[in-house]
Length: 211
Image (cartoon, rainbow, N blue to C red; front, side, top):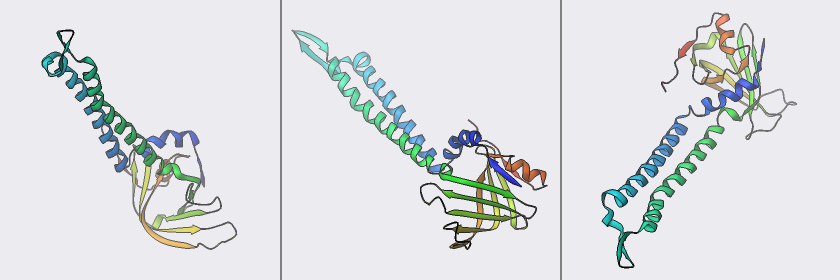
């Protein structure tokens, strides 16, 4: 049985898949903190200079004592601008890191038989169009299957074979490795999770993180 890619579902899952990475979440948190520091810090500085302690920036203009508004604006920008610029840069970095995860998998195919699951793909920016990584997951070798409802990632735990083929003309893999876990994101039609459940395979659910 071959499962096909649901392009719309894959596109809709990309954000959840990408931002589930710990490194991306940490960078986004730092970016939010910097933005908050810039906005709140700038607001507090203006409040101190204009309302609470106006004498901090008093100067004499034509014999009258006045607040130096231009200096308040400039000094406030010294607080706000760096924080906002760093925040934007960190968000861009998080976006780049996020895009390097599952979105780099292309030319995917997923076959399910009574004995095993065969998943083939290649990494878009790290391989030629003729290269493939082929993962063979035998049902007899599966120890557990975990499903993340936030990213719809199906994680297989057990003992599986991963083979790398460098071209169509070479039927033999150039690299073979044994792996103990692998995640396949469920943007297939019919659903990979539902197909497994229909075969009586137990799937452990991981609930979404609270907002």
